[in-house]
Image 1 (cartoon, rainbow, N blue to C red):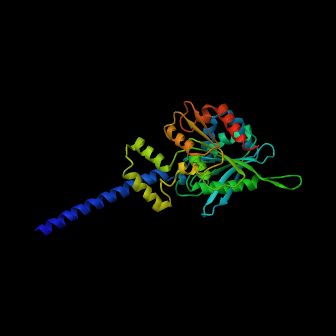
Image 2 (tube, rainbow, N blue to C red):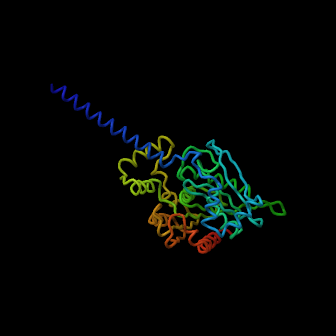
Image 3 (tube, rainbow, N blue to C red):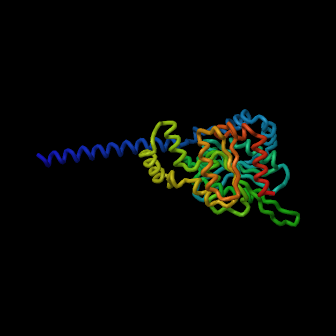
Length: 328
């Protein structure tokens, strides 16, 4: 009788464990799909983003119409080492120059969603510009969102492509290297910081990150608590483990905080003071972790990814002043 009771208890405990494990797996799968799945049919079109950027930043409309009407905006496709076909837009500066900006979009955006920052560099500063579609965005292939982490290798590759496109040949047929800044917003800023922690070519001179998160763990943990009222334990741990199993990286290792600590090239940090999507408080540990040279600007009253929209003149002035110290 005692043996039978014992076996029943063990059976009940095992049943509960299996039920909890199955529930955690199901919820973790849902959370991972909710966060990282972005089917091609759900992607906003280029026209959607061009219209939206014109609406939010009407001062760039004339320039945008002009560069498209005169076919200045060009497409380029690249087969990445990982085997997927990637896409980017690029446009030359109004006058021949070696100064070049790589402009990196955010979560569920695409290259056209960064045309306002392209305007800053191309129209205001006279730079060549390349705008990549990150993995799983725009015209680039990909079955999930990488949150900027594995995207760092692709942006480094795009930097090399931009160097080949925009390098200047002198009258003596000598090739002048490009001088590059990498500028990202939101997930693009996290990508920029992830790039900054790796070894980059000498022609990459500086970085601008605008409202990037400290790590994927911190950002997803914040969103889970704010949006769903879910604590970090155990769901964040199981979802991160599932991400590692499926995609090869975990939320904790995707850390911009650790990457900027390894970066000795200059970086400008920008964040809106009213950002609740990537909380403003995230910028301070990032700034503290980054060795000099560095600079920080908090845009008073701006919500997430709206610092340029709210303060176009000041934003442009601060970027031009910072970048101009390192790209002449």
